[in-house]
Image (cartoon, rainbow, N blue to C red):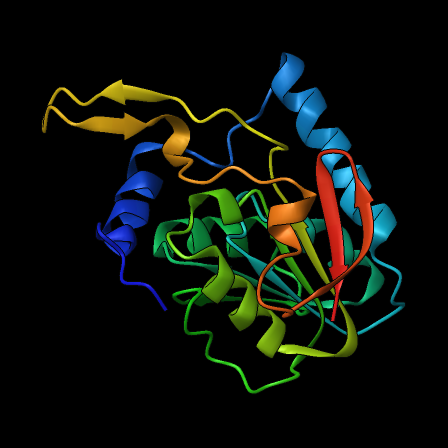
Length: 200
């Protein structure tokens, strides 16, 4: 695994203090998020089991799937986000875990479904990230990764350090070839425009 050239753990803990992932969205942003959620929901074809939501954001995965008695683990690096997630979804089927996505605290094959929505473009080593997600996935389970498609990365000049800083902390851009080139870790089963569903 490559070594990060920035302290991503501190960055995302600070990020959660500065930005509210649980605020109500409106306009085009709300529409885009709704369509993304509908896509993910439509792709999950198991009827029961455990779902790991990596980088859980507003905890919408837990909010939706616990209603159908799935056990959902919202995982985030930020305790602030996890406290909000548990308050938003107090179901007995919902638990929250703070963890580094590169070292998940679970045994191999622990989950029927792993969701990582709009996360992979932020991580410093995408291949190692996918490998770790795959490790905790049961044989025949579903790994659902979504990411902007062929995004043109943009930068601004940081007023503090005077260095180029990626907008929205997006440090990678993906298409189907990049996502399916990770050393044979995955076999691509379905590519649909902006999103990819990958099964182990």
